[in-house]
Image (cartoon, rainbow, N blue to C red; front, side, top):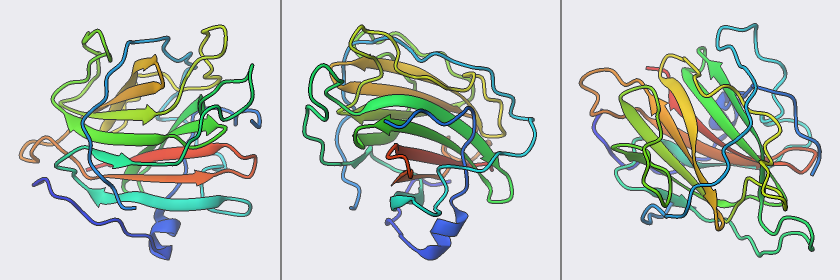
Length: 242
């Protein structure tokens, strides 16, 4: 597929099409796109993981779907292949909670779910205490912020996601992520994911995609965000299954 910018569309059809994400229990309670360069930092602690089976039974009810109590739902990048990094800015004024709490939005959960009927696979990142800004881009390879060490990912195309300002560790430097799927996902196009850094307000991840020949090494992606009834903020990235 030829890379192109696609305008953001916010409609009822999109709301109905945005399905769920799964991979673990819910965490305890807690526009247009602009472009910027990929940020840097120093790698930090990666997420704790729990097993996830892509061929498991049907998804449970999804707390990330639009429904009763869900607010602030919006599509921030509609289906398309970005030719440049896409930057979504959200207003965050540190500290988001008084000391000794974490000063930045805190990543607490990663979920993944496959939706063949809607032709996409979704990965969601759940934050407490605010929605960070984020940047999404296709890259030739994913490297750890700061060190430049390669992040091993399956597939032949790679997406880089950076949240800023955000953190994925507590005051003692331990991972704040209480639930996440195994990195080797094995879905048709979203083959895996991995941490690419957590330091000085930047939390980064890479996605490994399996892209068909002749597609310019890219698949359409979509980004959206919302707030769950318990106040948890969600940023989701959808990847076409074909």
